[in-house]
Image (cartoon, rainbow, N blue to C red):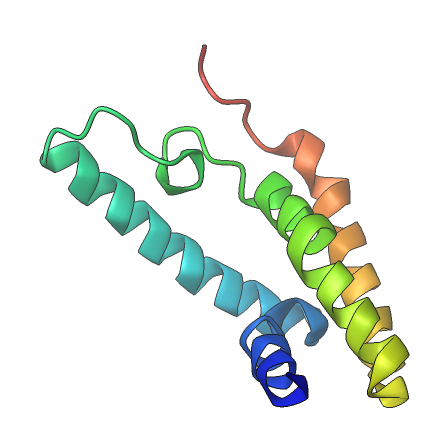
Length: 112
């Protein structure tokens, strides 16, 4: 179980990295999501995941939600139970979340 969680933390570690590196990975991941959305649109799929719709997705809001609901709980549990040195990574996580949060109101709202 510990090894499984360690691999999961490694997989979800981009938000814990320095902001510049995290933003590079976010851009790459969002490009992949948008390609998936475009492919779904080309194939006539009725619904496209909001995060995959380049016309309405808010990268900033999606990153704040991703951190709040997925990354932060995982990393806080890891730091508390297994690896206290992860506190430095949690600090970076909180700083990165704040960076995206401050920009979220500036991102476009999805069309009605």
